[in-house]
Image (cartoon, rainbow over all chains, first blue to last red; front, side, top):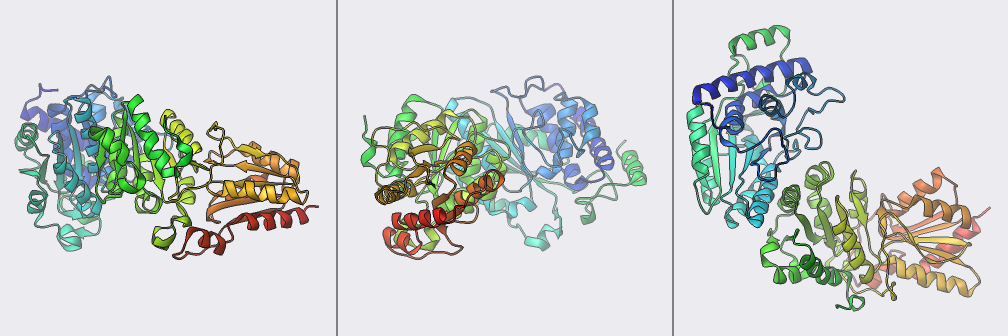
Length: 272
Length: 315
């Protein structure tokens, strides 16, 4: 998955965003804001950085990905479908009774989903387990975990943050989709996370900061993370919640709401 | 070979884990700063590279175990029963029960016989919590010999397990060996006047009670219900039909434990008078294990009284 250049990847990210809007609109519920903010990161991982094989979702040597912010499931489903893990038509079944694409990620039902999520704060710990297994088995796959910034208010994230450097898990990369918003409002008002980068540094992580919508910066940081030895890496990606759709961007009302027909049309036009 | 009969259940578990670890390289062990008490210290010593010290972070420990399991490892995660249940319940639910990861949670210091440490350390809700989780197997061995067999079965059976062990040494029930079968009750005494269904340390008391009752001509069937989930419905239904009077005994709250589960089975099959011994909707206090058992109506004599009362209620 290394053939795509930056412009290609930007195009794919736009496509994923269109899927997100269409899927959530059709489902009548879901989380557009956090799915749109993560689209560039997910694109960089699945179409450039990660070693994986859509025809063999359980390939033991694949890089692992955990969407710890499980409510951003639509953007992951869009990426998995575009990669070929399952047919694109499945995207029309999001959140429907009997569908394989659940409201939050479910590893029992969706090919390519390595671990269920939806209750925040747990993915980094699960990723540590996968990274530990790689070390034990002397395998060179990497484990990537995507967290939300609001999610980092969960105490378990910091239990995991303490653990990973103590075990020198340099095969682990955490990415924080720092969009500054959570369900009830701005993170700085609900429960300020700052100084955020300093927190991770004091926990002995290598910290990289990027504009989470600058594809080149995102790809470079993910690749650089693979070179760091002796400690885990966290990429703090500054993002805009709802990125790409003017009326959703940075608007707390769009954390968990589906666009209506008219809104969907406008959004898709903006993402064309 | 280790003679497990001389050991507390947690000690037997710790020693046997090293035997298992020797045979199965997939096994890894996680602990949250209690390895000297849960006895995973033996494994840590034998296989330092496969022992994962998590520090005081039970939530992190359970999710890490799940991550390891998704990569083909067989993780055993241990801590005290109070922490293994309520402290990390959401992690157990989301990372183990729901995705059905192959994680084995073995708790020690279950029940009130933890004793002097008091109510904060007395797990009395853990069986109810774990039984409430779809996909979980829940086992409470009766003694050290059955502990070894239960741990062997947990390692060999794909899927989530919760095994609850105790702190103190308990009398050996299986002096001449034991065949543990998941989902099967073990009939330790035959009899048709009443059935005593017990789990964990209450099993040896159930046997004592049956022996006492036999002296006054009452023949009780004794069932060791170490496998609480899946439960042996057939054995319970047979007991209800053939004895017509049932006593349950457990070192756990009455709500949601063995007594509740047996009541459900009995009520939906052949109803029979039932008496349930367990902790009655209260937190207990510090004290010696035997004092606490007595204070909470969990002695062989209490089982005898309960058996007589259910027999008197027979139609």
